[in-house]
Length: 517
Image (cartoon, one colour):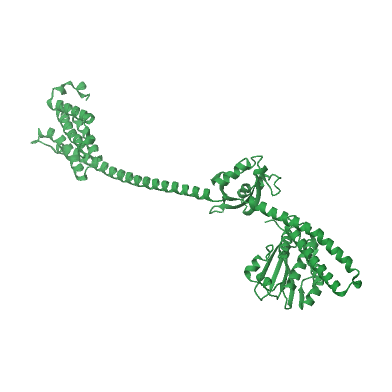
């Protein structure tokens, strides 16, 4: 548009002026015509007419400005990138520039040289090449846009599905009756539910940050604050895996007993990435157990005094047994036996209800304890026609409380005799390694089912076979036995079968305190 200022004579040429006018009309049409309301691709009329306007300008300015033909590249680009059918766009990209170049060559058509012919044909071919390049680029661009649109749709669907799953997970977690928290390796919460958040509020702080300071998380005595490294999440972050770890959250009347469990999260390369901790409110259960223990302890205490009085007075009367009629002496002896049996039962109840059953382990020869226990049981075994054999090396050193382990041996041997009513044999054997001593008591008595064997250490449990045989007992002896063995850091198991006898095996530490697990 600035060429008339450099060459004013161009304004005198009608073709050039017509080209300027047509360009102006097309410019105004682009601004004012609502092309989006017109039929499909009506706007392509603009680049087609632009070829005509460029042809008028170029041929009107020839031979002064033949380079104006280069302007044809713009409508070629427009048509090639418009999405028009490839044949139509390629034809227009060649024919448009061709007709721009032809009129100026018509004047010397008769004397046309090879240079003129090359100019007429080469320029449209160049525009055709430009059109092809743009066409290929446009096709690739549209393919990429289509792929991006598809990926965008897939990502939106995945995001929607992920959001739905997250809401479902939150709903499921909040619906559970336990607190759940997942933390990363630095202690930041990844997932938590409402019950776990209640636990954190009860403690007065977020325990996931080690060294945070004063927090209301107490040990089992309900009064001693746990150090930061013993709090559940701190232990889990250290890679520990545990279960039934009891802590008390909060203080005063609102203090709650919480049983915690944790499992570490480990990546494929074995690196610790976090942990999951589960919190269960067991306040009601703990209080019920405490109330039960208190009741049993109180009842046992109230029974003990009158029983001691009865036994003492019967003993005094029996001191002069020769002066009593035989039938009266016999009845007093029955009273004495049953009173002593009842006193033993009260002692068992007291021991079973006690949460402070103390053991004082030291280096002890188990072989001597076995010998003492068998000497005490020999008379009872003879009355029941039970033979006793031993296979215990001497000495057999273990880290144990001789009084309590003697109590355990007496209980196991007396049970083996009691549950062999038709006679049989009892064998006591032992094996040892550097860490543990394993002592077994095996009988050939009535035995019990595997289901009963799994429950035999529960308080007040009595096997069905024992009940059917009317063998007396309260189901407390073995629960006390397990308590004593576990207080030593050991364990006890039972293997049995109906009519096949039973084997009780206890494991005790050989030297010093048992290793921590």
